[in-house]
Length: 198
Image 1 (spheres, rainbow, N blue to C red):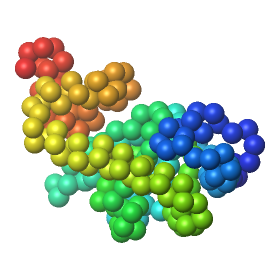
Image 2 (image 1 turned 120 degrees about the vertical axis):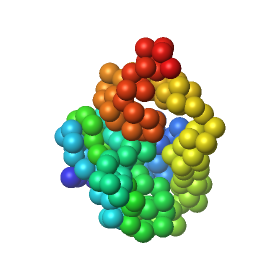
Image 3 (image 1 turned 180 degrees about the vertical axis):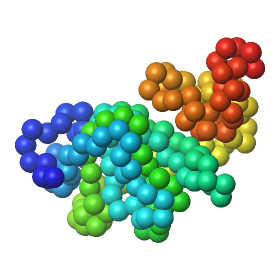
């Protein structure tokens, strides 16, 4: 793994700048500290009980967030597809053990930065600190608050329709078993929803 020097991924730099626009000199310093990674399908990026010590920016691929309940059943809580941030935000911010796993569902590519390096850059650059605040707000709201609200206020069909609006091709990339677990319904119920019979 080699820190980024040249041949900067345009998709990645745009990814960074779309969160919060950084001055060119700050952007250059920040991206020099990221490492390009490739992981195969089924690779576990973060294991339940381990602390999230990296922030990842996936530029290609698919991942799921899940935990194993007391009955030993895997419960999906979130998906990330293609250009998205990957992290257990709560574990990253608190540096406490994660309550879930992150696993790739496809061969995936990403850029990674260590938490300790991230903290040094936050202290060094005021604009990057503002960037980080914006990132956490966006990611936390999407991953935690929206998820809770969906389960409270949307029925199964509405949750499925919202998922499709976020990821129109998700059923071609994620198994129906994983999708039904995320929606907190049985696979049979999901099949009825997809057939318009629910």
